[in-house]
Length: 114
Length: 113
Image (cartoon, rainbow over all chains, first blue to last red; front, side, top):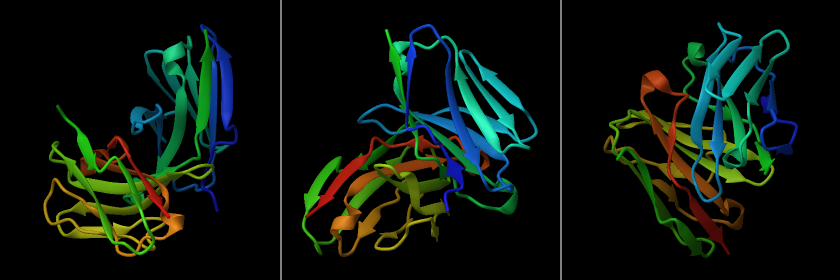
């Protein structure tokens, strides 16, 4: 059973426009969420996170929104740039349960078209 | 430079021939982990370690072993590799108090024929 779902395998966006990547989760015990970015031939790199006590976290062009009631989070990139083209992974954890695991989604490949 | 290194980066081997993929980090992180990435399946955790001599299974531990004899090293051992272990492997590390923000190595692409 997939606990973190990224239902869009790919997304294409014009440079300068907004990119919205979505993620749904099923485990209501998750209370910490992250986005990682991965370029080809490199390891994933941490991008932004959000705790369940917040509904929004912003870092420059990147904003993550969390809707706990819908078990949904999204990553907004504004404005999108060609260098943002990468695979984006959503991840979640339940630190309160003493779990030391991160559960990842399958990833969404973002292509930003110049 | 803070980093996680993995060796080898590429490996082609045959079924049943024992191999070890090394992982080392220079950030004094307590937590280390191994993941595999497969098409359509994303990143799945194999094993993790919270500190020296403390290891635990992730979601897909079958066919793998790990050890944590030193804080900086966390090797992944395949005692008898099989073709279904052909994958892209990533090692990662972080401080225990900041588990979400893991630093990943560059990956090891393993092919088992």
